[in-house]
Image (cartoon, rainbow, N blue to C red; front, side, top):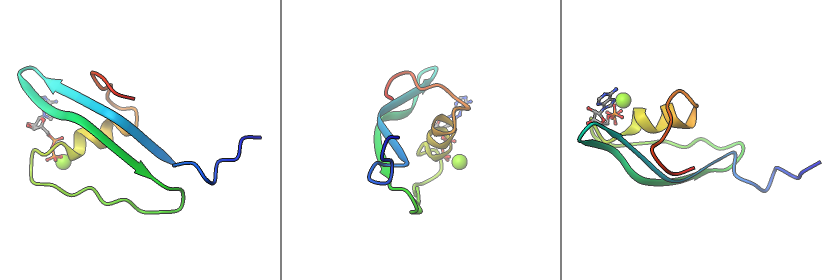
Length: 65
Ligand SMILES: Nc1ncnc2c1ncn2[C@@H]1O[C@H](COP(=O)(O)OP(=O)(O)O)[C@@H](O)[C@H]1O
Ligand SMILES: [Mg+2]
């Protein structure tokens, strides 16, 4: 079985997402280690909800993984 404890629970690289002319995410990288809490802070419109929707598979990014 693959050892997972030393790997991130979440790993995102280069997430981009546009809505028409608006760029909601422009290359977001983040990692969250297993058993930790990651806070995502930013002003309204920063792209927090878009990022969480992508990480939870509710929305597809235009690029990134
Ligand atoms: N479904 C959508 N259609 C068009 N624009 C959107 C949509 N969702 C988000 N946006 C735009 O993308 C940007 C990021 O929004 P959002 O991820 O909701 O930010 P936050 O959650 O940080 O306030 C904003 O400019 C918002 O207006
Ligand atoms: Mg939001």
